[in-house]
Amino acid sequence: MGTMGEIHANMEDDSVTLFDFRTRKTERIMIPNAVQDETINGGHGGGDEGIIRELYEFMSGAYNGFRAADINISVKKHLIGFAAEEARHGEKIVKVDEVFARYGFENN
Image 1 (tube, rainbow, N blue to C red):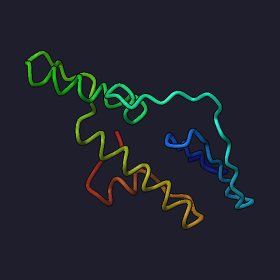
Image 2: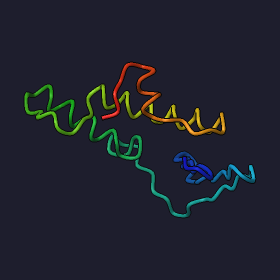
Image 3: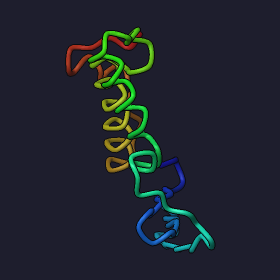
Image 4: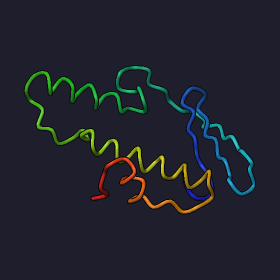
């Protein structure tokens, strides 16, 4: 999602949908010859493989803690997304620092 529209990839039918906020028009583009991998390596666009690898490393004692974001980082990333939605729906500027403070976080 950007300031002028959003792009959505639909991995089920190999298409990309573009939505323009100004014109309110949607365009669907089919991606020819797309390859779908329904194995553990392909889930969530390949992200599942990394999650499972980290879980294995954690459970086997080999995890060094440098790949996965801790919960504070994850929450802050979600709050940034919520701030963007608030700005979009309210057609206003929303300061991320103020959104963080609303929920007891600092933007650092």
